Image (tube, rainbow, N blue to C red):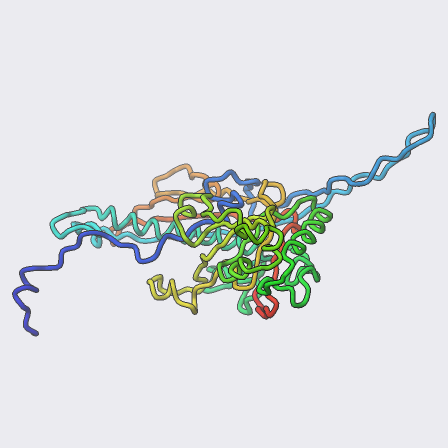
Length: 395
């Protein structure tokens, strides 16, 4: 047995606090689109596959008739229908009584005792809930990029993945028109990428707005991109000339306090350029780990696993969220929290509960979320390649 010094034996390391090595992931898309678990869903359903009827507002004009003439009969308004299927997310963590029994609290000193391991359990519960929040954030962000996929991992278990993932078992296509992707049907011309100082960015948004209003009745309001993509805009000569050389190129440069998490995170901020004042540029540097890996710091921050919500050279352009062009459907599922519970409890959308177990003594903390984001008007979403030399194959 190797020798142990007096200091090692008699002066054990004292723990003074718990330090987070990675800031909490935000919920930018859920907050912007008002699709958080705490928000009222636009559709609540008992059925996993459900539908909704559709119609378009009228732009045609009523017939003009001569005096004393009978009415001119008009065609009836067409009504359509769309169907959707909920995504069911269900997971649990096991808290063994012996593991947490009479242990010190996480971040506490050796002299402290947390008999039930409450702080440890709270950390694990935060981890569980965050993974569910991440799933919802992924689905909403990918809805605004055109779709997402699901791939089978183990029998009846799946993982969310990119729409174009070659290993995807199934894909959810939101029907975003082809002209609303890549170069936006020619709106962003050759050599006019936003990485070019002379890019006519205001003209691009004017053209997008004209087409969006024609197709959907909406106008663009938000442009979501990362800091690498927004950086060249500060050097754009067109935006500079509109604002004037004697003025700052931007009107506002602030954090976006949509939620406490977003307000505190330096990964999210908003810029409004004087030469394009009708658009809010939301700079989002957050992302997720899509692969099934050990959730340690190295894997969570690895260039291999970490995927930005909005890749370099890409921009998501959408109107103001009003609950009409997009929404969220939540499903209702009955659950029994313990064997002795005679009447099940209905969980709408997201829910968490605890189930006691024996042999070995423990309790399982379970979470469930039945829901899916809905894109009622696919024509409002634009997922653009905004760099001139862009060659990414991402959806």
